[in-house]
Amino acid sequence: MTGKVRTRIAPSPTGFLHLGTARTALYSWAYARHYGGEFVLRIEDTDVARSTQDSTDQILASMHWLGLQYDEGPIYQMQRLERYREVIAQMLAAGTAYYCYCTPAELEQMREAQRARGEKTLYDRRWRPEPGKVLPPVPEGVPPVVRFCNPPEGDVTWNDLVKGEITINNREIDDLIILRPDGVPTYNFAVVVDDWDMNITHVFRGDEHINNTPWQINIFRALGAPLPEFGHVPVILGDDGQKLSKRRGAVSVTAYEDNGYLPEAMLNYLARLGWSHGDDELFTREQMVSWFDGSHLSKSPAQWDAAKLAWVNAQYIKAKTGDELSPLVAKQLQKRGIDADDRLAAICALFKDRCETTVALADWAAAFYADITVTEADRAHHITDTVKPAIATLVEKMMTVAWDKASIAVMIKEVLATHALKMPVLAMPVRVLVMGTPQTPSLDSVLEIFSREKVIERLRKA
Ligand code: GLU
Image 1 (tube, rainbow, N blue to C red):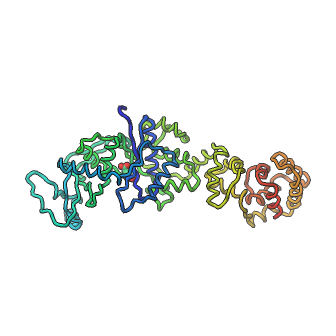
Image 2: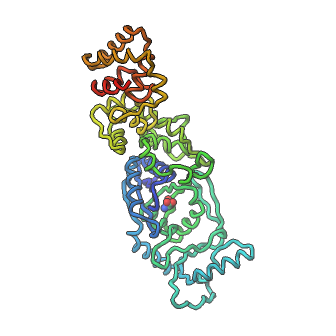
């Protein structure tokens, strides 16, 4: 490949960073890194009514959380209005754009007439200057828009990095509005000026933009600007086969952060959702960068699979040490008003293998820091009259035993021998009383993390 690869992600700050956009960001980032290029973040905030600072902040935070570092940006389109107006002025002078004074009512009339004739509703180019054509008189008090002189005939063809060759005929599209009366450009125009000015060589984006691409290619050509390559990534479908949307569950990156997913796992899962490298399911960011050359991108929609994501997350949790997990779990505990202490790393190490998320880990850890509830069913089932004397002996011995795993293990064995009981008969009720559940890792390792006083206090409730 000649020249430096430059990719970008260009979210609109009208909501959180959507999972689909996060995946496109990942592909753009990995592609740039693979080819030793650069990755740019642009905030497309020209939809002034719907853009918010809060959304921008959330998007930046999600990019940071995912670890998708950009080399330039964030660049805000609303800070580039002068540049867009400058290009518009050049286009007006060159005759590749023109003023249109149609009122919304006129446009509606035009569309209605077209519908009545069974035609496609396209702007009829009544204000487009043409040799020998007499334009309507300029009405008073109508602020004009600027429209692009789209070629009326001919095909626009590009070799899409994901979908292969795509051709759309110019007769399918009309003379697009590129500048609104308020002086703010529209998406299809601003995106071209930006991709041109920012030397973007490869545009990855969602395939809902395929129909915009012919306009953009025509504008690039009208400006004499080099064309980037385009790769349109298929949508992500929800479990139900419909487009992933808010109504169908969490679609924002933030929600997954809140729900205890690790950024590494999210990236790994998102990467596989529309791209493959053989049968590899688990890989590092570095491996992805070394493999992501633009091939093996899927042409068809990917299906969101919450269970698979949970499995991927579990693998990443398992691979981390207690020390690594502890700050993440501490954050989850804090949300519940629980301040953890330095036992948390040991708790994480002990429970991580049975957890899919850091929220699940926090559920376990909470038993060490906050009150537990023992259900009546568990109490009735496990804390039987047979076992109560053994629990009493255990409490007795606990007052003086050395408080470490090995000594605790020996003590439990002694109690079992004294009362002629098998391990589960004693271990289950102790777990229920101390942790609130009969299913935990080995009793000695659990008890060791508690203070002696706490265990005795809970066992006395037998
Ligand atoms: N702001 C557009 C979006 O969020 C960007 C599309 C593009 O990448 O060109 O969909």
